[in-house]
Length: 393
Image (cartoon, rainbow, N blue to C red; front, side, top):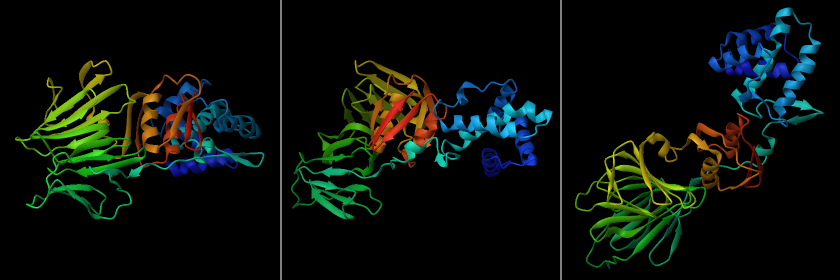
């Protein structure tokens, strides 16, 4: 039975229009465990009349009222065979599973002529994902909003041409000439707001992807004292062009990363409890001492203590690839990431939930879809008012 068929039967079940033959098919489907191990396990447990805690609906959810109607109205009004009477808790569980599979709010029932959905309060105040955009601040103080700037040349300074390509990428090209005034102190800054991300190609050909609420500061010609040097606040992913004569250095508060040619990610947000540097390829040296190998991540706490561990590098660069990847993360860590990308304010009602979450979700989804997925286990719930998200147990 595919998802469309299951969806259709569930809708008939809720509206009490399901036939005996269709009810038999639905019962057989869940009792046989055709939909996978989790559902089979639930069906088995429901034989004893208990619903596993992970699928328990909250006291105020639409799901709870659906289940109540199923028990009180559908099954009490049918002439049940002994088999159906014994198995009604299984179909009760099927409703819970369908809510999990298809997402809160996809199915609904009517009460007093009014449609009620699990995520109605979230969807009515939905927020779209972030998009490419940034501000380029030149050494003379001029600011250029790259989201609205025309394609083509933006500026020439320190023998460097700054252009915006048709795909939105910002590109620096070395264009030395005898009549060009070389100002080695010319400093540029590329910055993103919450809900923005941008890609940059530096004069040496190195590529930088800048995450939301971040900034990168650098000399227009990139070279300072024989070193390619940039300063980072926030998060960025780097693909550095090899140049053995000019090491590449990334400075962030409490950390200096020195490389020759490599791919790595640095997360250095001021509101995070630590700085994380993750190496994908090559080698980097941190603070003149620790050398990372591919697949390793260095974590520096506020007190300056550093630890190195092997990690899933895909999780560290998921944002650059258009995803959120949460690996046993608490809700506060997750909400800080969502706040930066969706440009929302996050508040908590009472003590934040202590449960951790593991999920892989597209960064191109509206925020309601992500909040719905996080709330599936009933360990956390959300309320949206404008661009404010309230987190509740």
